[in-house]
Length: 163
Image (tube, rainbow, N blue to C red; front, side):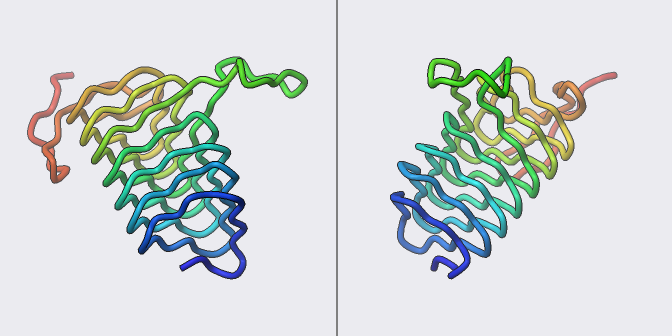
């Protein structure tokens, strides 16, 4: 289902995926099967999103981002793709790739700085600013985000770090 107000350019959309109100999907993007793309989401050129992902309202996913399967992206999450942005300078050589591995969850209003890898089943706390790689099954929070614990596949905290 693609809502009538959504704008989908020449992109690949998997079976069973729902694209809601005011979403913009740019050309070359690939969205897997059984995804839910919430209101106002922006999916830039050539972004890849795996199967069974849930992208909440108003997330911005810029060129260079690759998202695995079974990933949760909370509302207003922002991915970046240029470490030293300037309005008057842009070419594809400045593009820095970001990888979100299978099963990861990113909380509302988190910012993901270009070039990081978020590990399998990692969990990013709401409002965090992720500036470096997040290991598999890690729970991170803060600005800058730091490891505060470990989670299991279901997202339960199984270990807390000492402060």
